[in-house]
Image (cartoon, rainbow, N blue to C red; front, top):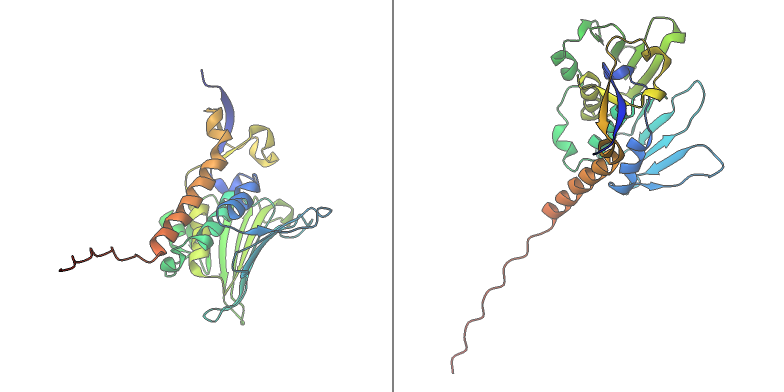
Length: 254
């Protein structure tokens, strides 16, 4: 008989807590070819894209954003950055890095970051979308020369009750912000270890647990890496030039 392990399923997903950082970093390295370099005496991770245009830093700095994603300016677009608080669910950050590394990413550039929230029934306020329970706000500031996105999850207006915040500067491509808001509004719960749940979830009415096969949990990362690896391999195969079939030689006349 296959063994099982208890998993907590958290919904809405913005309450799930940070989760395992490897969900973001391991696929970037193993499937997408991002190189890593860091000081072993410092508690941080630095990953750099193969073209050296982007880097992701995980730096556990108290009272500041732990995740920072930078992309350099190119001939066609300005540089941009995004950052994420320590308790931002890693699945939401992974939605951004997956979109960034997708071979067909440029084809989704027209997506509006607000569309997924509207489709999920989030409330409208001036320049702000608010989740149905009032816990999470998506704000887009464009006044006085400012152009920035702030996504904040907080149990109350008291700063001490803020769970996490994600920030995107105005030059961040819309499809990347939309990938984040799509993952944010997704009704599917996020799985967490019941023993590692944040304190605010222990009495949460929408929290449930279930027994899951051990293999489902143990190989979740490998399945994710395999999927992203295949995505890149398929894109490379399609990009290779097609060689013309060799033509048969005509027989020589004697």
